[in-house]
Image (cartoon, rainbow, N blue to C red; front, side, top):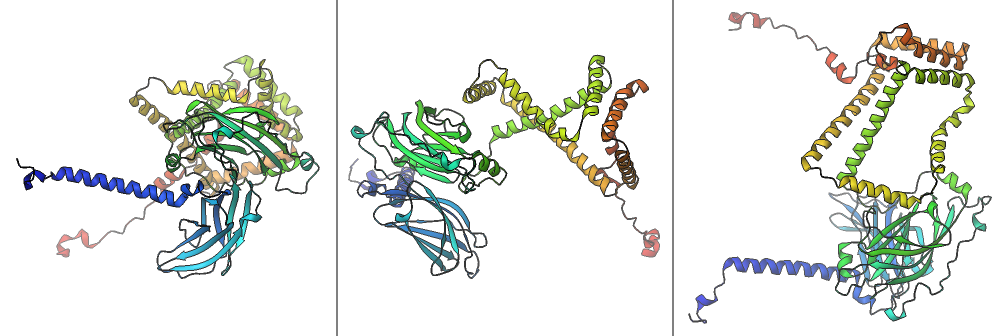
Length: 573
């Protein structure tokens, strides 16, 4: 065949479609990479002198001017710093809450411009503000309410300047034993008698020395890692260490502690383009503030994204040194106020294992109360005479000596039980070791040989059990409601007369003697009536009251009037 003939150049249509689709995919990925590079300007970091990274959290706005509401409308903000700009998502003007985070690179220009726009069929300018970043303290989160110029209202922002040090070459990276001094916070400022600033209960100092055992997906195996530290809404980021498998940051950070029950979250990221686009982390660790040992330099194992398993790598770990000082008086008063809301949170996910474990927990609670009720009945029925005699004597002695001021002490009995149990252990076990052992046991239990069918059947039985218990609780609450609203007047009046008689008895007779008499009656019912069926008097009474479903069945329908014409078919014709 002549290669220059037209038939020799014909390409099948199927092959051309595949080539066309492949080119479209390459074009789309190319646009994504180009958009990412233009947005983050990673290539300019190596050329310009990077001063720091500005982390901005756009929270909300208030007192904004009215704008025309024609059709669909949205309120959004635009941030501009130097040649880099970002745009927020659009929210409804009636509730301008964004809770969105942006990272902008700070070079020479330190004026951050914030413009607020309202978009309908056309854009309406709502106002602007300019923040001078040079006036803000670095490596500290600033909570700002910024008034808008050329308009009305204000914008709520969290601004943090961090990552101010450029990464060093591998040969110049400091080692972990470079003599970096960990400076603990001043204890005099947070003595128990200093009650000047109630919003700040303490101060935390963290020294991030370095990390080992990190893994990467690239060919060289080196990770361009940086570390992010978060305490409530405060967020600080270290500089990036490039081109090495042994990362050393050697940085000191200070946090203001607003809640002593919070936890310090540390996350390690890879700055490479691929990992940044995927949004994956190298490792995480959460450290409760109350578990921090001052001036203790130790390694913390890194976990994966779920914070349950170990992160990938060769024993990934991070070396930290922390010190915490806090005022116990202000911290105790702070736990009685609402907890600080984190503005940036991940959306909840449908976690099937978590749902299953929660169902197991609810089932165990219902089973606990059911077993407790059964033991309660057996004691009163004298199935075990020794146990019943001890219970009767204990009941009488308790209520003979009981006084009202003893009630708070009774609530401390569960704490005393667990405290004594832990003290009786010969070898103290650290909390993290106990958590690891419990997790390993759970992991071994989950790795059994159950088939999918057996798991589905088990989940079905578990759901039916919980549904039955929930239906019983709902029915009980509905019966109490119908008892109060006189759905059955006889039972409601009977309860009222009983409560009035009980009030008179409590006024005339000490409560100790009443409970002693009640206990004696409960324990002697078996002897008075040996053939009686074990029961609960209160539940038996409430069972006489109908629930809402029974009330619907009892509802009377209106009797229709008979049609006179229908009785005589001849007349109807």
